[in-house]
Image 1 (cartoon, one colour):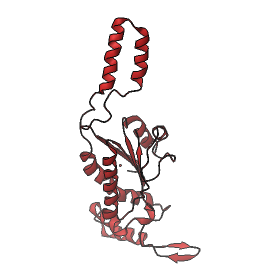
Image 2 (image 1 turned 180 degrees about the horizontal axis):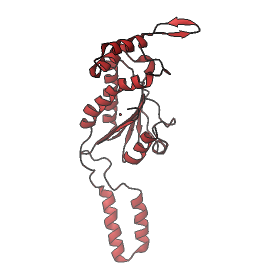
Image 3 (image 1 turned 90 degrees about the vertical axis):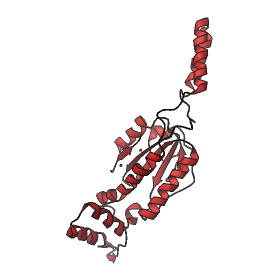
Image 4 (image 1 turned 90 degrees about the horizontal axis):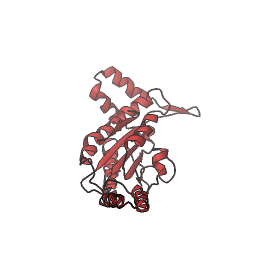
Length: 238
């Protein structure tokens, strides 16, 4: 988790939107067939796969009554963290191989014309020897980004996941951020048989950047929040 937070703070510069995801009852909703299919892609030991299948379907005791487990990996079980992480690696691959290439373009933003204009004004004031104007213009310059935050030819999408909590940072319009969230929701539903919690989109404040991706205020799971991250903590970016 500390690495995930430092990735967001140190690398996600100039991000406009946070897309925060929370999977509804993730550990209890893991589809056993999808899990075994995913494991069988890399593991070809039938006895081991049968052992995992029997473990997943072993059931549980509640108040000394046995209950069947039709889906999910028991939260708190010794194998549950690694099994859920293997399961969600398919989400990581989808984002890394499909979304990141589609929503990253441009080497850098174009210069901000308003910022450049103030720089030219500062240079003229310096030549005139007008110290008061230089001071005021420098204060004004501090309020502006040096690059155009709305450059239509520049996009950046970054991603981090910690267990079943994940966060994307997107530099681009809100319409595309909502599109990204919809594509992830469709992938989780159609491919992984999971549901994404999706409350209404909300704008964020600067506190989201300083507090990290699990900030409980102003944003809630599944939101697209106004802004500035793969394994149990893996990070992607371009």
